[in-house]
Image 1 (cartoon, helix red, strand yellow):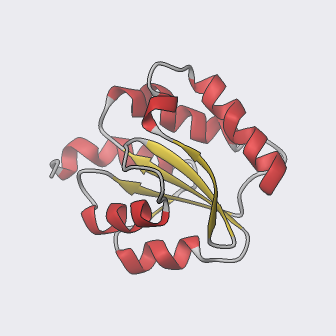
Image 2 (cartoon, rainbow, N blue to C red):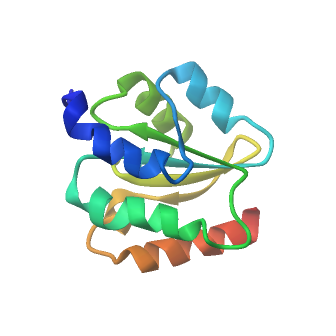
Length: 136
């Protein structure tokens, strides 16, 4: 478990962009099962979350088509919420950071850590935008 003061700026990075933080399994299940599309960012303290995942997620929201709901859980901190989100991302193995798009409660697009690590935020954002244009 990471200290709250360490993760606070990392949380605020997405919250300030309009992401709703989820802390419980019930909150995750409720958010993902909403009608429409829901983007879930599994946030992390790692460098690829800071340099790639969070900037890409925020950048992707500049597209005309975008998810109806945007939420986040924090790996290594919000264990219950992260486990619930990951359970809904099966068959993909747990990874953080990661970004998933759900439509009407069904997983329709997944970006795992190995798709994030070492890739520029712009490429990850473009990947998300393609998914938004198809599913949102």
